[in-house]
Length: 114
Figure 1 (cartoon, one colour):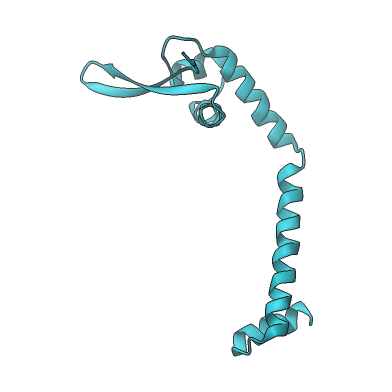
Figure 2 (tube, rainbow, N blue to C red):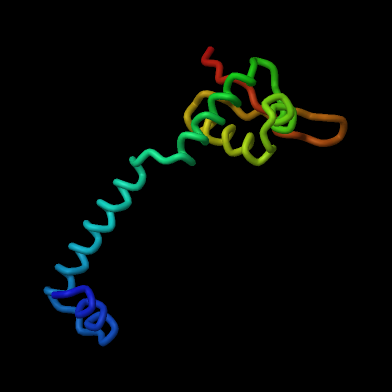
């Protein structure tokens, strides 16, 4: 069964065993393409990894705000927040809430296991 025939069968509501088999094949092919794309190295992925390293080196044990790190590293606040989110997800940094006057702000520290 071709992909076109598969789509036509789904649209017309004729779902039989052959259509289910074709759908399974298409899903496997989609998963394989996505896995290749995810593991492939690209310029954007290398730049992102480099930014994470720069941001990681700017972290310390004391809470630091994203905008302060951005100024220190020469990056935009958005790039720094993205890198910080990845570092938190990877367990290399921690989010902490710091009270500044009457407001609470998010700050980041090096991850500490103690």
